[in-house]
Image 1 (spheres, helix red, strand yellow):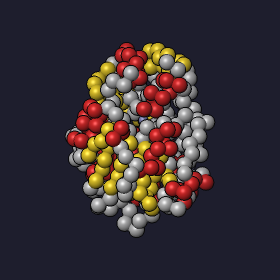
Image 2: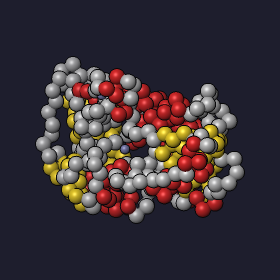
Image 3: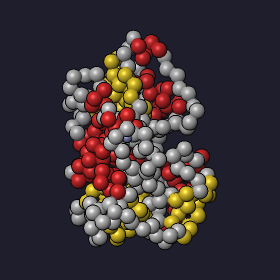
Image 4: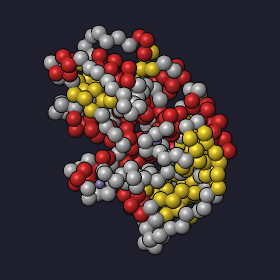
Length: 339
Ligand SMILES: [Zn+2]
Ligand SMILES: [Zn+2]
């Protein structure tokens, strides 16, 4: 089968690899849609600790089951939407309800959705793959993985907000960075009833999508630290300077969510007065557990927002390299790869 290989930073090739066979509980999915992700772009640009090179590339997907191992949760012909990882359920972190930090969640994940077929092992099939209803398109279903990251963050925010009511009505949230993740935050926060969501960024066409999702929008240049501040600020750029700046927009007693992962080895510094005397809570959620995936699927099924606005076009496997060049140049939000 054809599969896109990330050979080295900036180098992609279209290779031919053996079609994997299934053991009991596993499934083989014919990829119908595989969306590009900011993590893929990071790996393409500079390498990524969680994405081995050379290796098969892509992790967001939806598709049709073409082979199912004995006792598998799905049958041949089923349309499915899933993510590429699942917690073990038994390690230190899983037992404490921090499935997203499971010690083997990364080592047991699958990559390679920019390919004709994707092998999904039993552990992931059982915990984090779901049937795809007919009224959800394959390309929207492929958004389950990034939306799960957002759902995990929203979950942590609800637990850690420091206000008894959690993410209640009347809350004012600032999202910084109008990439796919920032826009999914807007969609999720509006969906759960947060009244005031402001999206800050530079790219006017992306901000326009945020507006359609129900956010007020502001250019980062006009964002001022003065005033009362926001109850919650969600940083979605993964840039150290923005991490450091983000705290300026949080109100006393508010919460800063540092969502965008920065390059390894970088350091950020904050005014200790703001963190302590202004009692600003800092959350930095990573990845997702099973509850977040379930929540994200529900949001997709019941979405008020037109999530197709996040999709900038459809490309073939042959066009993956040019697609990443476009993404690198800032053209488009997410692309759908159709093998
Ligand atoms: Zn992703
Ligand atoms: Zn675990």
